[in-house]
Length: 227
Image 1 (cartoon, rainbow, N blue to C red):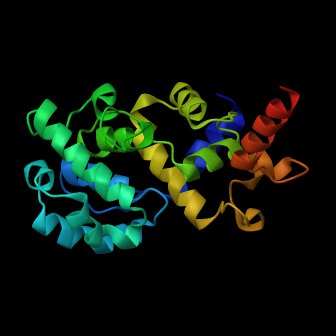
Image 2 (image 1 turned 90 degrees about the vertical axis):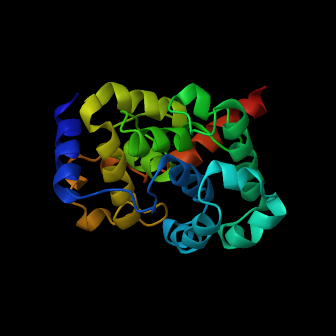
């Protein structure tokens, strides 16, 4: 770890000492469903719909008996109907293959419909207390801008962060970067002039602001054109 990287992690810890999940959930099933709904949707919106959803469908057994058409009206404001389909099908799979209990390994969780590494890592970290670094769009952007990672994919960013950050801090570091991405290091207009991490930030000293997602897309297009 470089001195700059250590300073950034120390700075994030100092900025957000009480950072924690902004989604509301109380058990692994609620964590799983809320995180599926949160894809391309705000946590605030998800938190508005889940109380009624969990009141009527409190566990995998109840959800597995429902149809996507019954669930979609509850979650319509969170986006695509495919989310309702995935929630119902994931619940049925939990009942049929995991004895009605949400699994607690990455390999098993990612078998569930609608569950990728990020969602699985959220469940592992915040419902089972296992060390994990969920990499969402904020973590991907902030980690690569600050210089904690130098990667063009979510998977590679996760790997680099796991190598850099002490395992005991993995879950909390996820929250630090989400908080910083939502409050300071915005996608389009990062507030570099007021950011206390600016002296150590890789992007702040680059000629042009780094947008890791756009950079990855640009490089992929260049490779495609050459091929």
